[in-house]
Amino acid sequence: MRNPSRPPLSPEAQAVISATGLSRRTLMRGLLAGGALVAGGGALAACGTKPAKKPEAEQKACVGTDASATEKKLSWSNWPLYIDVDANDDKKRPSIDGFTAKTGIAVTYTEDVNDNNEFFGKVRNQLQQCQSIDRDVMVLTDWMASRVVNLGWVQPFDPAKTPNFTKNVLATLRNRPWDKDMNHAAPWQSGLTGIAYNGKVAKEVRNLDELLTRADLKGKIAVLTEMRDTVGLVLLSMGKDPATVSEADYDAALEKLKKAVSSGQIRKFTGNDYKEDLAKGDLAACIAWSGDVIQLAAEDGSQVKWVTPEEGVMLWSDNMLIPAPATHRANAEQLIDYYYDPAVAAQVAATVNYICPVQGAQDAMTKVAPDLATNPLIFPDSATLSKAHAFKALTEDEDKKWAAKFESVRGA
Image (cartoon, rainbow, N blue to C red; front, side):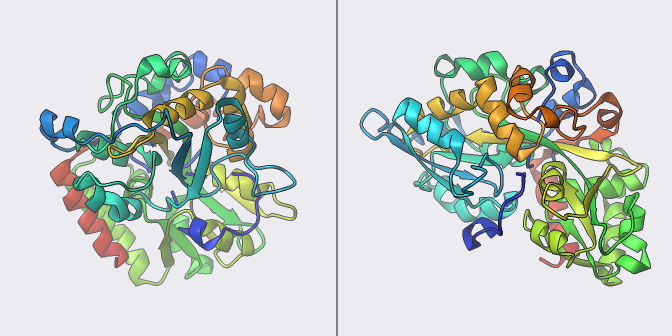
């Protein structure tokens, strides 16, 4: 989901960040080019949901008229803290400024994706009726991205207009089952889901069982509203593989989670907004995204620590999508292609600290922020990746049923 240290988020930004696959966030060229992500590559490619597609004629009918030729602008929705910022002015985003300088296209950038389901709930009625959602690009996690793609609510981009994407996208993220032609979703960042704790108020948390049962953490922990992240880690703590989980195992994991809710161990379920509470020590520990933790740990005086749980981590990706009713497709295609320039990708990665989907970005990263080149959360080593897991692809019916069970446990 998902960037280095920045001041408190605006109310708008408070609203962002699966695991499905893999939210919110960079890369080693040798690692990626050499296939070090193979351990997670299959997982990356397999994540998603399998909803029934809308009839082809209906999909084609819902495509906004492209006004890019006369309107040099676009609107982009993303998760909070998920793009590069100026070191002296957190309101400036250098890569966006660079894009505008290069193309003349003005970008309205909004940090309003706090949770996949929450965002989907805000836009589904308009998308279902092929009405504008006032966005030309939105960023969603694999499982939700696959859902909107299969529903026909995303318009394809032209690979001829995105040569950097076609050339530089990581091999493990090519030809995913729900986007075999690579023309609906461009990975923005990838990342890991594990545990974080604040060393000022808690001792090290080594695994999920400690998080869910330790007396000193009671009422001071949070887990994610992203079902695949939270339940995925619970399954791993039970020795179950999230990629092949049965409904019986899923139910057992929910029972374990429910006990922690009923006992008061879990204070709340959160989206990306756990960061502020963790940094202040209002939360002692939580399930967290890797990039967020790197960012929090970089703050002066921070005691926020990342833990790769003994049982493993979840792996996920977030994707740039062009909504079907969007009216600036060509402008969005230029944006996608721009961010697949390795130099630009490295610029973003140096801030957001997630796994970068752009081949060749590590070389550029050594020029931008050489001190980050050896960070195992930005450039995962084989040991970390060997512990990375993805949640299995669910049918539409399974997704609805399992999500409803999870919502019941979290009291939503």
